[in-house]
Structures are given as C-alpha cells and as structure tokens.
Length: 554
Image (cartoon, rainbow, N blue to C red; front, side, top):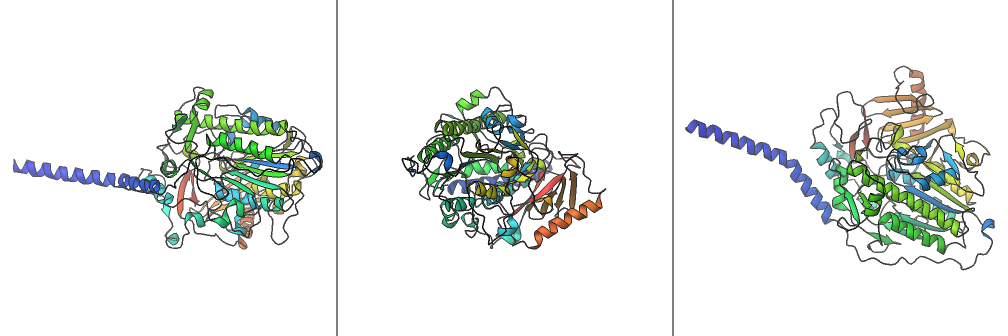
C-alpha cells in the first residue's frame, strides 16, 4: 500500500512539473502581452482635422501648372490580390483595375525589400540602405520578445529557433529613435522646393522622434496613423479575425489602439473605419488644394493585420472561407473603394488630366495570414526576397502624358519613384549624393528605356542579400550558406535553382553584390532577431524535412 502511495505521489509530482514546464512559455507570453497593453497611449476623443486651405482662385489654368501628384501606397498587398493580376483572393478590384488600365502597368515592379519600413525609406529617398543605413524595420519595444517567445514555444523540428541578437542588448535604440536620418532628402522636400503643397495621410514608419516625423521630412501636413486598429475591437460595426497561428498578430492586438494624430499633436480617435476615414480626409485635401500644385501621399494600412473589416464590406464579398480570408477580402474591397473615390474626386474637380496617380504596395502578401494564394504564381511571402515577397503592382496614370493601356516590361523598383516624381514636378535631383533610382516616366511615355549600372537592382537584410541583373537573380543567404540562382526569363516563379550548375554566373552576380556592399555605411542600429521564414508554406502549415526557408534579419 505504501509503495502504491509513493509511486502515485511521484507520478503526480512529475505530472505537475511537466505541466509547469509546458505552461512556462504561455505564462511568459501572457506577461509580455500584458506589458504591451500597459504601454498603449492615451487617446482623446475624435476631432475635426483643420486642413490648410489653398487659394480660392488659381494663379494659372490647371493645364499650365506642374502636375498634381497622388501616391497611394498599400500595405502587404499580395500580387494576386487584385483582379488586374488574377484576383485570387476572391474579390474583384474594379477601381484599381481602372487605374491600371488608364495609364502604365509596370509588369516587373519591385518593392525596396520584403518588409515595410526600409521599402518606405527607399520610396522617399531613391536610395539603397547602403547609403543611409535604414536597413531593418523598426519594431515597437517588446515586440521581439513576444514574437520569439511564442514562436519558439511551438514544435518546429525542421526549422531553427528564432535567434535574438546579443549584440543589440544595451546598444539598441528604442522604437521612436529608429528613424530615417534628417540628412536624407525626401521626395516631399524636393517637391516642396517647387512650391508644391505636400500632405501625408496614414502610415509613416520612418521613426517617431520629432526630427524623423513627416513634418520634419518635407510634409506641410501629416495625418498620422498613431496606432493601428482599424476600428475599436468591440465596435458594433467591426468584424475581427484574430490569427492564433501568428505571433505578430498576437502582439498587434495587445499593443495597438484606435488612434491618429495631426501634425505631431496628441493622439485622438479617428472619425471612422480607418481606410474610409483616410479616404474622406484625402478628398478634403484634394478639394482644399485644387488651385495649387499638391503632392498627396496616401499610405494605407490595409490590408495589413490586424484583420478588421466593416460589417458591410464583410457581407459584400460573399461567402469566402475560412473566416480570416473573408475579412481579408473585405479589407481589399475597402481599399479598392478608396482608390475609386480618389479617382472620382479628381475627375469631378476637373483635375484628372493633370494629376499623376501612382499605386504600389510596400511589399508582397504575408505568409502569416494563412492564405496560400495571395502571391500566386510566385514563390515566397513578405519577409522573404523571393518574388512573392517583393513583386508588387506599380501603376502610373497621367492622362496628359501616358497613353491608356501602356505596358512596360522593364524591371523597376521603389527607388525609382523619387527621380520619377521629381522629374514630373520639375524638381532637380540633389547633386551632393548618389541617387540610385532612375526616372521611369520616359518608359511609360514610350520615349526611352531605363538604364542602370550593370542593369542591376539590389535587396538586403543582414546576411541575406539579393541582386537581379538583367533576367538573372541570385539570392545569397549567408547565415545558412545557401544560394539560389534563377533565370527569371524562363523561370519567373523561381522553381529551378541553377546555383550548382552555373558557377560562373554565380560568381559574376556575387561580385555585383560585393561591389554594392563595398561602400556601405552600415546599419543605423543592430538587427534584433533572425527568423526562419518558409518559402513555400504559410505559417499554419507544419514544416517537413527538406522544406526550404530563408533566415530573415530584423
């Protein structure tokens, strides 16, 4: 009897100990998420945005003025999310299609990298991170701990654990201090020198310190996404989709609030569903500035997580499964409506002919959504440099100069936007620094090609570096000593790795990467995390032996 009691007690102790070990990660996760909630900013009541009102009468006819410029940037839009490219997400995008059809479609357009902030820096400056050091996406304080804790608690036998960088401890800057240096010259600054009125609406993500903010980087006015809920989680008009599979999503739901700010002021509640409200305010900006040249940078948050749609949009897209996919489709539906409303307003005001409208996305669709078709037919996701992570729409409409239905096959990239828009606005490029981008307007107008040194475009994040030169693309993952070489002319979806069979081509492209890095200024701050990202599977699917992945530095 005593023996049975002792054995039973030992089993109980072992069971309690096992449960304790299993619960340790979840307890730490809960603690870290509670910390994120505690750091939420105070948010004031909604307020009316007091936009600057331009002249009541124009000094000269619209057609004699420099063109207005509207740049619409979407966030994490998948290549296959819009019906111009197939519409695999399950919802048509007629207004984005209309924009594409009315101007030039750049069929091989690339983001600056596979995550948002460095891409935005390249859009603003026309320069690679080797020039200014803004290489890694700034993440809110505590986010790295949450992501690594949750991800490493999951059994993933065929993938390495997320690795934090010990060299960042004690030297790393806080979130607000990670920003684009003020010494950089943005497209807003160049256009402002040409008497453009410059307005930013939406996401910024280039630093939260006052000297990094839009008003210090060339924008006369800035309606900022102070935090990133599209509506309060308990709003009667919202449909939410939480992604239990995704550590990033868990952090966002804990840390974000429903808030905006104007010109660096205090946080206040927006005036509606974020995508629609920003569009409402954009129409007011167009109205206020119809008698002077203006540059409007409308940087949408959608369709980035957290997945939140209005009930009307959720019903409008129909019976799409699973639930997260339907909410995501509803967010695409809202973004498409936004584009249509902007185009309609320009037409109503008689400004369409002399207004350049550009649409792109900061990177490809995310694998952590658990929606496999977002980037079809390409491999990879956001947080990789495979085509799915960096192939994006680039549509440029300018009725006065660009013929409808124009197709440009030459590869272009986000670094090309600054010289392109500067040229359109009559702004000379800076002469005291290298501008890596090229003016793509002549190609859109059928007046010439696009020439760049070695016909090369570069991407990088830590030890993961990539070059496309002509139709050849080399990906070099230095941490796992892995190479991928693809001939994109015959293999645009990167299925056939030629690295082992074409050593001369590998050596040639490696030399281009090394030369590009030779004069690098280095990163402004250390990376904090190295994450394995599967190339061919969304986050909800288990890794198997032999699955390919990249190691992403951030």
